[in-house]
Length: 601
Image 1: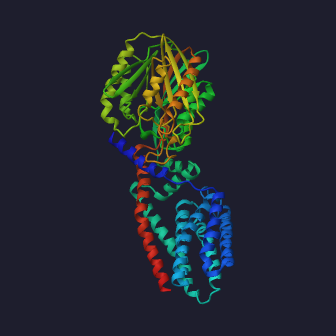
Image 2 (image 1 turned 60 degrees about the vertical axis):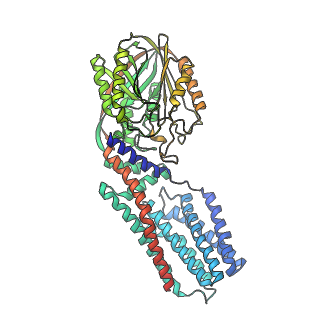
Image 3 (image 1 turned 90 degrees about the vertical axis):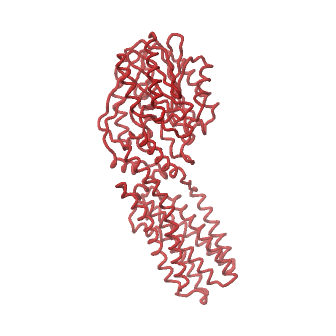
């Protein structure tokens, strides 16, 4: 589990940076802010040298240049680049104007105190600064060719500085050809500085046999546009083939009633990448085909089995739908039983020859569990003569990070004890009811996936059990206990709460984790109200039922693998950390060189 712990740490570090990326203003907002900066900010700062009318004209010309060049860059120069749509291109120009305005204002103050030449020097330094900014942003994020990068970087600043030269030449004593070498050399120096930074970052990938910058661009493209194909293309290239085991427990009455689907696939790594969307995808596709309620709780595994792409997701979905055509045959079930050992809790219910067993460490952190735990349960069930064991990680409490390895022995003992208790109880005819509610006010950013809240109710004689499956990535401490207490008040003798561990909610919010576990950003009382509502709906659907199950393998599915996922996550983290260390050095040296060049002119 040490490797798993290291992987979780590296992924957390990568998602921490990913989720801290800022949002950009709309195009309308960028236009308004740019107009204020150009016409008001630049106009006022130049008023002391040129008077009201000329300064107003200058600011207006800058604003017009900005609008026209942004349109040209987005629609022609960087055409079809998914990052540089108009509102993002205008945002780059807006930030550039903010930087340039700071230099112009400082130069204005010093120019008034000393002389106008000092003002020009600061204007030129601001010009160099925005060249560097534009070069860094465009070269680090755009997949276009170099010559298109150069045009996109230079067009707006060069037109603006040319406009300034025209104004400066109205005062022959102030501006002369001596500043032209700076205007020519500044872009060259900026491009060299940015190249050095990107090259330094890219070299980090050699240790992992990866290219850091293409990988970073793919991450950024997913953040900015939700496109998953570029990043998944990298994951496909790095992936390895694995046989994926899938367990399916189905309940039928007069028609299909409910299904519990447990693929040995981890729903990650984050957002809409790889198998992050698989839980809700499997649920919706199964429900559409079989017209019944489905859920996808987490199996006993970790990030070592993240799928690499949507194509691999579709393979899993296709195989599950094909394998579910069997008729359920078992008409008897045991009551729900629960056993504990230390912090470990195991719950079990038997349907014919199928054992359904779940684990939790709540109120301790219940994160991914080692596959050896699932293998142990399978071996134990065979000793009792059962054909199939479906083993689920409830994944229903997240407090401080805890290494599950230290509780494995407790989990094993709880499973053995629980299984023994269940086998000693008589089996009886049972009823099943199921329903799903998707609360519209709960969003992905708040931690609720599109699969919503599903309830599967099992009634054996007088015992009524609720299985609550929430499409999310874990839960805050003691929320499970609140839910179980609320369900007990509704006459559910025993129940359990699960999350799907969907990583579709990850890398969407700020903070160290980059996601909200269920209950952190969602009101508990509102959530419990919905859970009561969905259980009431499921209870109303209770019918005499039969259970059936199957286990099968989807061969040679491409997964990212623990080692490569760790490498990708570590590289993303190290690349950003390296950039923070190296950028100040490179750009400080660039600034020093530019200052010396200005002073020499």
